[in-house]
Amino acid sequence: MKTSIFQMLLMANVSTVFGKYVYVPDKKTWLDAQEHCRAHYTELAPVSSKRDQKKLRKAGAQLEQTWIGLYRDPDDTDWRWSGGGYASYMPWVDGEPNNDKEVEYYGSICWSCEPTGWNDLPESICQEFFCLNLMVVKEKKTWEEALQHCREQHTDLTSLVSETEVLLAQREIREAQTTEHVWTGLRYLGDRWLWVNGDPLYQAWSQGEEQQCPAWSQRCGAVSKEGEWESCDCQERLHFICD
Image 1 (cartoon, rainbow, N blue to C red):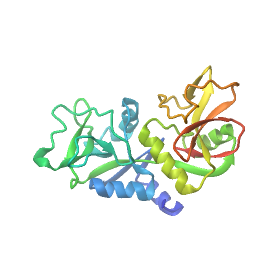
Image 2: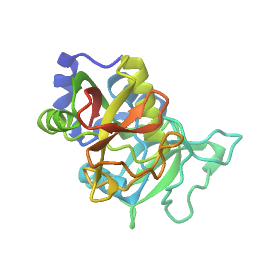
Image 3: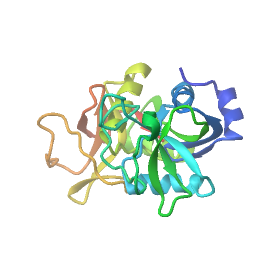
Image 4: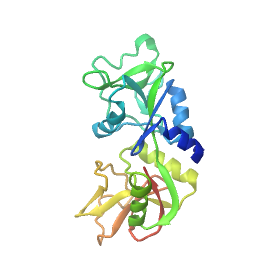
């Protein structure tokens, strides 16, 4: 369950919110950081691209290291995100991951490294961390009304730029008991689909929707409770996700 408004106001004094990411300056183990993010936000942050890491850099520039949601099981060689999905973008520091003493199964960004990169660490180390925060708004609005609401009250209609973020959005809208589809920041403009915030286009269309060109331009993108994208009339009134 998300924290109360009163708790959020208290946390705002120490946490830094920028877009869908929240920097938490409390030093915790990886598992405690994961628990904190799930209790107060959405999840310990996934990082899917260089663009994502640049967003984190705004808060992490003066830090040495911070936890992100990266981990692997001791009996597996694949790295995963705590919100689901495998990691593909992994800019490791030279020589990492090295699983020193066979206990390093958790991912951290080393901001003090040159260049900035990732390394694996034991879960027991305490350090600051980043959360991902997707905010489901249970008000029925057209796509443009939803966009205005998000930009006035939060940052923007959210973009979903990886399998992990789609899975997390799916989890959030199921728990919130929303409309069958909810608006995202996806819009058909200039003969192509794009995120209104400029993020790169990760695609997760439902069967039959992929590569489909809308018959008319007033089409906007929503995500379903099954985690699939749908092309909808922008005037339809749906719940939506802000970041």
